[in-house]
Image (cartoon, rainbow, N blue to C red; front, side, top):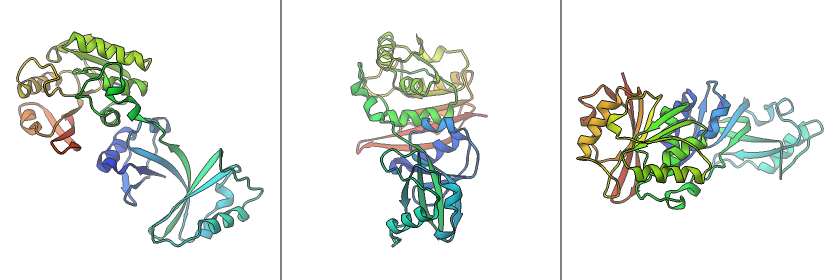
Length: 310
């Protein structure tokens, strides 16, 4: 069993991202700590955008002193604690109790081989091992830091989550613009495919990918004329005066949704919350699975919507 400490930045999205990428079910234990009883591929964890840390549960008991420290804790270790705000426990005393219970213990606070997290949740003590800490800094990949900036580019952290909601190995972004989603997919070592009706945007996407030493299958193509099948479509729909669209935006999106039924069964779209997705998919076979609001500023809220073909 594992605990996932999730980011409170967008908790509902963080939970769903874990569940979809790892094929697990999460149960809420505290405001931001969730339990998974399912097995999953550890290799996928570094892809997660909104997970801060992951702990493997080694032991559980109502009494701290009854936790099996001797069996679970290996030499060259460090201890950390996550306790309720009402908990009066002296962590120094708890650490001393653990130290004295071990045979030949070696504490290493600077560069430990093993870090153990002691949690107390709902009157139970948990001895866990830290197996992952998220050290990615997506803000260093924000649009204005790339060679070619595009003002409507989605936040890289949300771009990562969008990919994780529907794609395991490969995806297409048919409105790729300057390549923000392609960069995140490339860093995950996925097979990424991008197209755009604008030759200028394809050039900029290629240059931005080169900045991160990444490659993608890129082509100048109208999103309404794509026929090649893909595992998933992940795209941020064009909007605003800085985006090139060939017709009325609602009509374009509806035609795109109709055409994409022949390409994939899994899709996630980023869009303004004013877009009436329910109406646009009503004449298609797409079904809305879930959506998440993203507050940008007081005059703009964006949305991430997952669509599945049934």
